[in-house]
Amino acid sequence: MSLGWPWALLAVLVVPVLLLVRWWLMRRRRRLAVRVSSVALIRAALPGRSQWRRKIPAILFVVGLLTLGLAAARPKATLTVPASSTSILLTIDVSTSMCSTDVAPNRLTVAREAARQFVRDRGDGTKIGVVVFSGIAGLLVKPTTDQDTLLKALDALKTSRGTAIGLGILTAVDAIAEINPDVPPTGVEVQDPGSGSGEPPADFEPDTIVVLTDGANTQGVDPVTAAEEAAARRLRVYTIGFGTTQPSQMTCSADQISGDAPFGGDGRGFNFGGGGGGRRFQQIDEQALTKVAGITGGEYFRAEDADRLGQVLSDLPSNIRLQKQDVEVTVWFTLLAALLVCVALGLSLWWNRPRGGYDRAKALSRA
Image 1 (cartoon, rainbow, N blue to C red):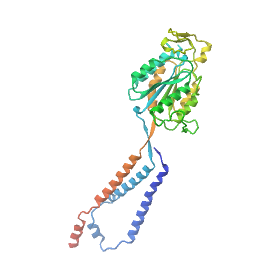
Image 2: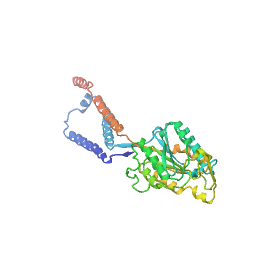
Image 3: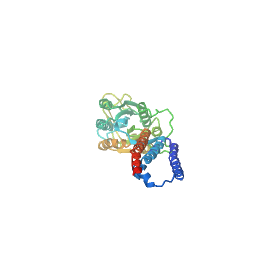
């Protein structure tokens, strides 16, 4: 629970002031009380009421005023966001190193199949979007629940030169900004919730970015800089480093090669032998990926084979559903306060209504 206007809690001070005024009036009334010869006669003439019954309306009235004072401070409850309110941006690396065969038949094929399974498993209303990046980045599919569209887009993934992880993250941020009015697009200055401390924000938007890459950033915006932009917009970024540390031959089929592939595109695919020079080409920058996840409140995962990648993606929703969102509940506190005050007044009027006390007193006087 948090408060939007904490200073408004000063309104609660009205309650002790009212209690002091009531105490002073009761004390003054006792001083001015008229002495009578028979207190028992007066008590017999009044309607019977127990001590606790007289206090209930006053207690309810005071609690109602306290609740109303709390409502003035605009309380916010931290609630779990339902899955139907979330969107997940799969941001997939399609650089030429994804043709590495250290994960058979190659990294791109395994990543594509794992992403396809991830899409098929989401039947809870979660919107999924697809961003791809190589030397540049682009939004392939806007966040949607249309699984057929998503699966067709994943089937058409093609490799290209370069690895621009930072641009991929920023493209995902802009895709979220198009569907979530609370997320400003990139290029708009936003105050960092962490105040430049490098710490993740305290609360998050319901949308999430998942980055799957097998290499290190080679061009474009630095991934850490892009992560800071995401954190400023309260967006989590989960990162997945895919592939082994061993260099291997790179082989892609013809339908996995774009026109700017550096090793040809003649319709027969290509083969490129591994070796010492291929090690740097296929190396994962785990330090950068871990920092990206840490800055945004996400988590870094390592997947060296198909089974581990499938497990990571299947476990992601359990982490994503842990996201919370502050929802203002002022109206509920106001309604509760109004209800308590109305009940207090109603009970007071009902229990103090005339109930033949005059006739009782008259009968006693005749006796």
